[in-house]
Amino acid sequence: MSALHFILTLLGGLGLFLFGMRTMSDGIRRGSGTNMRTLLGRLTRSTGLGALTGTFVTVVLQSSSAVTVTLVSLVNAGMITVRESVGVLLGANIGTTITAWLVVLSLGGLSFGELALPLVGLALPFFLMEGTKSRNIGQIVIGFALLFIGLGVLREEFQALDAAQVMGQWNFNSVGTLGMNVFLLFFGAVLTALIQSSSAATALTLAAVLSGVMSLENGAAMILGENIGTTVTANLAAAVGNRDARRTARIHFMFNFIGAFWVVWWLPVIVEGLSWMWSGVADDSNHDGLVLASFHTLFNVTNALLLSLITDQLVKWSDALVRNGVQVDPVQAELDAESVRQLPPEIAIERVQQELLRSARLAARMNGLVRKMLAPIDDLERDDLLSLILRSEIRLDEGEGRIGDSLHHITQLELSAELSERIQSCMNANTDIERIGDVYKSLARKLGQREVAFSYFIPKQRERLNRMFDLVEEANDLMVRSLDSQQEVKSDAVAEVEGRINGYRDVLREKHLKDTDRGRYPQASGLLYHDVVTSLEEIGDRVAHVSSQFASED
Image 1 (cartoon, rainbow, N blue to C red):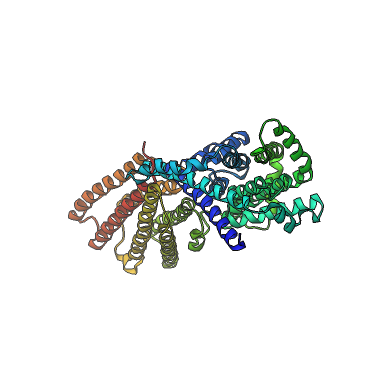
Image 2 (tube, rainbow, N blue to C red):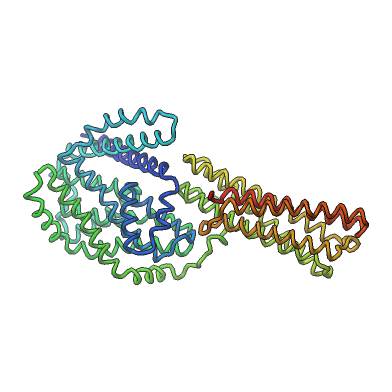
């Protein structure tokens, strides 16, 4: 067998495994929509409940990386605290061990590989159907089948090797047992970081051990390293997040690093004990695989139980690890289109919504600034207010550009129907908020003109306009709350405020016509008064439209 042929075939088998894992995971995520994010956000109030949640979700998704990256995004968005994330991290480590058992069953006595193609045949009709749910089911089953086809390729390639020759070339016994175990621990961490999948790295390790290329003890050392390497994904996601997001990622690293550090010293004893336990139960074909799978589970469960006792200390250590970082409010941090491009779609959309929230808060503040220009103020104060309003409008324009660029990048990705709807909502809100800023700017310029001194508002006019500003401010508050993922706004509340704005507009127009006919204020004042009412009504409509995009139904 040529080295090139072996390497390419090995990469092909690994590629099938990764593609199958990704296909299956994507199908499950599409089927669940935002349910996983909602579940993690609600079931993290205690370490025990969070651990159960993390274990369950990881088993279902077959990806601890998907769970930890989602968790980092929730912490970044402020939906849960660093302390609440600890339990889910512990559970994710436990849940990911199910992959090893599936691999052992496939590479051992139970051959899922023989069922792979029939499974594809059964799933094909579902995959070809028009319905989204049917296609998701087909995608999950096909991904499951591809996963085990890839495992079969890996096993066949390792079995074709001359194990003795390989062992001799690697010279495993050239250093002490502890030294080799530490080296393989480091190698396993690097391998997992490179391929971004601890499941794939575990599959490679199990195939190598079952084929005689690697000893049980060395395989266990590799698995310890793979537990460390899988934390790279969450740390990469946290690199573009705030300080708490980075702290959560560091805790994930500390869990696995501390566990690997104390277990590597006891590997010979642990592996020998597990080997003895399975010697009377399993046959030679799957004995070593069962030992490694049980080691993986025993390590993660024991490590989770021990480290759960020092949860508060881990949270403090994480604070020390990022103490030189600056705490950034995710709403105040400007959106970076380049960083959004590197995030999973759901997390990227969450980040875009945070930027929309930032713009909505700025637009809401403009309402109060413009309102101050109704009162009789001196020219200097009027100029200062106008300058501040114009700068705010420029910032809204800049935010609209950043959000638009980011949404453009996200639309190039493969998206579920639900995520596509969320993107459309963000696009609509982005346009509306930018237009709200334009209307406030136009209104401020009209009120800031020097000839307004001859278009004064009488007290009755000013009182009515202040009431209209009150209603628009109430609508702005609903808009801000609807964009805040930590709050909930009902669609009925949005419709009720919009109705009151439109109703009061009609009342003002009717009174304005009567007052004009009776000559109660100058014509110029009446025209400006009418423009202010019309502008505020347009702002109210656009604010309500933004809120309705993100409000929940009763």
